Amino acid sequence: MTDFVHPALLFILGALPIPFLKGSIRKAYLLLIPALAILAVFTMQPGSYGAARFIGQEILIAKVDRLSIVFATVFTIMALIGMVYALHLTRAGQHVAAFVYVGSALGVVFAGDYLTLYLFWEGMAFASAYLVFAQGGGQAIRAGFRYLMVHITGGVVLLGGIVLHGLASGSLLFGPIEGGMGVAVYLILAGFMLNAAVPPLNAWLTDAYPEATVTGAVFMSAFTTKTAVYVLARAFPGTELLVWLGAVMALYGVVYAVLENDCRRLLAYHIVSQVGYMVAGVGIGTEMAVNGATSHAFAHILYKALLFMGAGAVIYVTGRRKLTELGGLYRTMPLTVALYMIGAFAISAFPFFSGFVTKSMVVAAAGQDHRALVVLMLTMASSGTFLHTGLKLPYYMFFGTDRKLEAQEPPRNMLVAMAMAAVLCIAIGVFPQPLYALLPYPVDFEPYTGVHVTESLGILMFTALGFVLFLRALDPENTISLDTDWFYRKGARLFMWVAERPLASYEKAVSDLSETAALPFLHRTARAGLRTDLNGVDAVVNGIARSILHGGGVLRRLQTGVVTHYALAMIAGVIAVIAVFAVVWQ
Image (cartoon, rainbow, N blue to C red; front, top):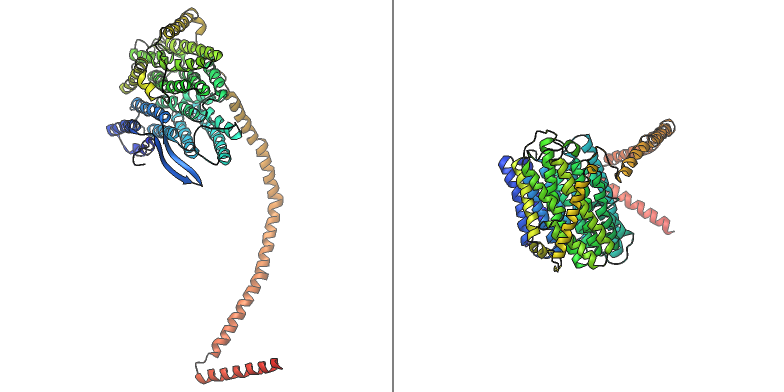
């Protein structure tokens, strides 16, 4: 591996010195590692690296091709932007967790076998959970435990699928799954879909992301779901089930965003919606669809991080995150408003913003594949995205009723990070060809046609008109929406009741029985065994030992040291042998 530097190792090993660095040296180091990782990705060549054998199976630490390079490129760029956003943090814990999190995501992207993939997959879960726990407070800690338990369960499901798949195929190498959809394949698919937040396996995302730290939520919005999109694109392209799950997913997130009052929870539901486009693209499986899913993942990481950074800046300076508590901030946070709106235009697929040149590729691929219903569902989801992320959230967060909040622009490093993401959102939208050149397949798609631009603007303007006309109906309410997490929240309570009541009672009954019946019997048996050992076994052993010692003493007395005595003993012995021989011979 001399011609390949694994960027995952740069982050994971690079996390070790962070707690020992202080001040400007730490800040420079936090930016140096992502910069080196970007350089490593830009200079790497396609190929296989780190081949070995383990437990009789071929292991491939890194497999580099166009698909892995494009995801690694945006992951390392996002790592740099995220670290700039988090430079003001003084405690090292979140920086260490973010480095391990990014490194684990990169490890998954380059994994050439399922064992390597699984180890990094679990590393992502534990590192990202810390970013929730670090927020502190009962609500965040409970959300962090739920997040961790869901991902551990998903990891167990994935591991079961990997083991069964390895036994059936005889190989642990990671690639497109061929053949029928057996139990092993469905388990692997379920493990991947959980991290992609495919309903009904989505509630962990909207439960945990709003409770994470301001900087931690930015990292979480970028890596877990998009890593899942990568593995789906690698292993399950053309899977029909994913087409419909993705289309439903796109609408599901939009519908739930209508109900949300928490700004980051609203944005989290739009992660679910936007990842739906990618899942549907992977399911369609054509070259254009996979290109669309990949490019949309690239763009989504940047504009969704920008949106979370904008919302995080508001939370950082005001301490509030509910839309019913915000408003009137455009006067004191104009830069934050402007940068946030760039992300809002990008996610809404406005012309000359990144979402326009990526999301439309997935929709066009669905049209080319003659999937009219899928096209309709994705188009409706796009309109809903603009309604809530581009209009409702910024209106009630930055404009709307002035709550007289004392606020100012966030620290300079946070604005710089937002500006970096905003520049990329515009650059990709205006000049999409560099991104298209990175995609897995040759691109034959032109986003800026008269028909496409006018159709998109028509949908967006009609959505804006609807927002103005029905503004009062969209007023946020201070309520909590129920999602599929209701089932495992209630299930967890039932589990705890079973553990504390019936199981505890059963354990007490067994313990009482053992103390009143079993333990006295065992004690009597032990005492009887001790007496047998002392009076029987030990007596025999001691008797034999005394006999041997007595015989040794007799022999010692016979050793006089006089030569004549030894000669007489030898003569007596010869006579005895002759006598015995004579008797036996007769």
